[in-house]
Length: 325
Image: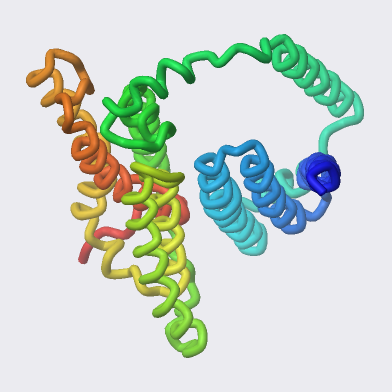
């Protein structure tokens, strides 16, 4: 029985690999941009399944929420805006040139070059993976030995928020720089249709939006001991914000720019303040006091949850919200 289950598992893995490769190729080479975006979203969902098969549920949650869900929504929004500009003819020449370039694709010589480079990169990565020693555990043994001192029992959270908290601080800083860059370029365009006159959709959103917010808080709380955390919860919070934007429910909230700026910078500010406070108390930057790591991590992740959710959700607008009148 066990042998049959193992064989079925191997067959499933091979089917999954083939589907991932096929969808990746189709999403890059489909002449229909909308169909290519849908295939990209499906590819993200299959990659989430692949991460689960690799026993990385934290990465699978992030891939499903951010890599497939929010990224797919951003690309669809960009596609809609591009087609609207083409219909308005603003600018006509650039829009038509872009359309022709996207439809025609690259030349055969460029395709061969890109394919050769991709194959070389794949070969190098495969060689590096097979060169790994089967007995090598890296830093896993040392990390697990220090896990009780981290303040959490989830190894991923311990690495991201304690052992290598510098990386996470820089990642949140990169998100802040991304939204600053987008806001500096242009004003955002809110969806033109007001969906509040659709009672069925509004009834669904009244049920779905609170569930998404509660699920985001749950993922934040459970991240200390199980897969979850600020990034996964922030992605759900961003999804709730995008749904609110589509339904026309967030107009008044978007005009409160001072509140938005506070929320966007909250994660970096709290993270940096925690680092400086830890430096003053323990003599090490982001080295939490003994026995208090769990509380420090929870405060940092709660602030990061708000910033991540706002950043990813507001990126959907494609620019800076309207000023408060």
